[in-house]
Every structure is written in C-alpha cells, then in structure tokens.
Image (tube, rainbow, N blue to C red; front, side, top):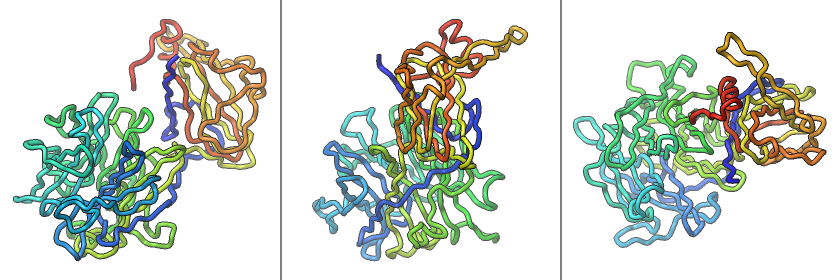
Length: 473
C-alpha cells in the first residue's frame, strides 16, 4: 500500500475536538551561523539558497558596497547548508571571484525560484524589479540552468509595477506557480498572481494587509511563503515601530516577521501577532538588527533551515549608504517547529484531541517533546440523527487502544509511533473514522501525521455510509 502522510500542524483548532491545559506558542529559531561577505553589505531582502545535485548548497544574494556602483549578484557555497563561504567562480570579466553579474541600474532581485516543472535550461527563475519612469517598476524574468548563467525572458512580466519582497511556490492544489507580491511600488499589502507557463498570469488578488490587531501604524511589507507538507506557510514581514509624523514611511522603522498559513495557497490567515524572527531589540547574540528579511527555507533532516538577510540600520538609511551593516543569518528550527501546543500547568495533565480522520492504513506519527505521553484511539460513529439533517457523531473507546494499553513515552522525538502493550497496530483500523486523544505532562506537541483524510461530522457520516471522501480543502 502506498501510504501518503497527512500532517496536522497546530496553527489553529479547526481539526481538534478538544484541548486542555495547553497554550499555543511560536517556535524559536536559533541562529546557527552568520555569513559576512567581506566586500559588500547585504542590507536588502536577499539570500536564496538551493540544494544542488552534488549535495552542496549554493546561496545567491545581491549587495551594495563602497567599492562599486549599483548592486551586484554574488554567490556562496556550503557543504552543510549552514556554514557558507564565497564560491570561487572566477568568471571572465568579473572583478570578484564570487561575482555572478551586475544588476541593471536601479534594480533589485525580488526572488530566485527553482522550477521543477520545466525544461532544465530554464530551471531557475529570477524575478527582477527595475525602477523606471514615470515612477514605476519593470518586473522582468531571467532564467538559468545552473544559477550562474542568466538570460532575460523577453516580453514577460511577473508583476504590474511591483517591487521586492517577492516569493514563489508551486501550488499542488491548483497545479500552478503562485507569485506572492505587492500590487505596486510602495504599496505595502500582500496578494498573489498565478501562472502555469511563465507567459501568462492571472489577475492580482489580495490576501493580507495590516489590520486592527497589528501594532499601531505598522504595515505588511511583504511575505515570504513556501509549500510545506500539504499546506503553505507564510512569513509576513512587518514594518513597524514607526513615528507618528506627516511624511512618507521610509526614513525610520524596523522590519521583523510573524507567521501566516494557508491550506490552498490562496486564502491566508495570520497567526500569533508577535515576532517570529526578529533582530529588535537584539538578535539574542547582543547585536541589534532592526531589519530582518527571511528569503529562503529548506528542510534538512529533522530540522528546517531559514535564511535571512539583516541590517544593523533602520529602514531607509540601510539602503542608502553602503557599509558593513548587512549580514546573512542562518536559523535552525526543528521539523514542524513553527508553532506548537505546550503544557500550561506542569503539575497537571495536558490533553489534545483530534477531530475525525478517515484512516487509510499505517501508523500514527507524532512530533512531541514530553513526559508520560500516551495515545488513545476512538471509533467515531453515529449517535443521533437530528431532524434528518445533521448526523451527530460520538467517539467510542476501542478495546486494546486505550491510554492504559499504550506504552508511555518520555523524551523528544519528531516521529514517535505509539506502541500498544498487546501488540496491536493502528493499521488494522484502516477504513474507520478515528479520533486520537494524546495525553502528556510537561511537554510540547508540534504535529501529528498519518495516512488519513480530515473530516467534519457530516463528512464522516457520508464516508461511513457511502465511502465518499470530501474533496481536498
């Protein structure tokens, strides 16, 4: 049987029947390495990282310096995805050994995207934003087979006058590439366009903007976003700490990040209104970095690596005077560690109970750090028919799958598979609609995974009666 895991993260409670003695918190990315170019300063939204066929990692970034006019595109390499050094390309006609190209005048790289749906000659797409008159931006697409040699894709524009911050992911729900972008130069809201061929694009649609829950006067500067195990995670960049004064919001203020999420890549929701990655008032190493730009995320083993350009200057001054104020930071986060439910009172038991899941075989896997964790499995079945319209379900105990039957787990595992004393396996419950209840003390639960389909009550009844599963949500 080909088992496809459905992963449940805890951004919200929509897939839970209950939760007791837990509180929702952001994960805490830790700085794993700091990369300084030595020649130039990376004060902008930059730093796209790719895993190559030779298992090495290549980072592309653009920067400015007092040694040259304008901006240049550079690259660095790494064997582990964490510790980078300038890559010795030594291309003809280039002054610096790790230099790739001069950027067109008054331009910035919005993002660089690995496209695995096209010919190898255009595998990588670079979205460039170049300022033009009258007060507009030309949004150009460059392509490359190797991240080194770039060619402009003629008569193609990825935006309608927008500027960085930009990101692209492949939307597996709608089978297209989604470009997360602003609508126009200087307008700090977030929306998207979609394309299947990098020739034609859908109309722009809004998805996020600052609201009444945000810090006063703050704006969403843009959002880095990426596909993640069946859902989409966004990192909105929040432009905040602004003065109340009658002029353009440019010459001061900080930028740090929050989290957002989507189940279809189009409809987005904000998460906790607190910083996720921030260098203000300091980055945890005693260095103040008012600007943090997260530009890349990669899964590696049991962790997620996040790559961010930073600046020790505030918005405005950081872009105008090239100094050694910008560095690249590599952050390490445990797998699924973006958000979690944590024990609130360590002297009491914590309980997290899922809604119904149509179980298609295999075992349950839990990303958890806790003491005395056990799982009970319940069979969801009809209990009451209300006016012939709404079938109310009830979860009944299954012999051999109670908390007493489960062997307690204490420790830290990204893939804990519950074991039962009688040797029974959850796999034997294939075809049923199941509810899982996880109990633990003094712990954190990050995700649960299994070969299943998430259901609501009527969907569960329809599946039990007719074998009909809902369409993807």
